[in-house]
Length: 150
Image (cartoon, rainbow, N blue to C red; front, top):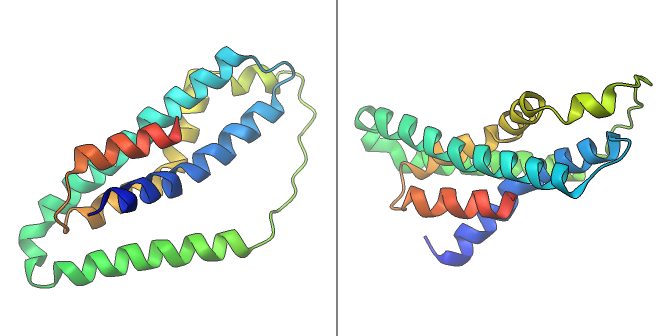
């Protein structure tokens, strides 16, 4: 896989975490640089770990599907790409906050950020499964995805 492809995958995987981080920051009453750095670090680490988990799951299943693994990789990456294109073309739903005064404090908690980070990295796990069937160094891909997300 070419370095340009890896970087493009990294940026594509980071967009949902970026949107979640912007939303979390907008919900805070007084966002600070430290809060932004913490969110970026948490999202980046989780976004780097999930493709490795997906890659391990894909490798574990590879012995059972070696005859048609290239079609699985094609299908997973194709469906994910189509989903991203469709999601990008849909208009965003506008939601309003509930007016809770503690909402800003709640968004800063580690566990809230971790759960949000994991929820936004499910697509990176699917990429990891697809990459298990290709000749790629998953450590490099995971590092690039994590750095692009930070």
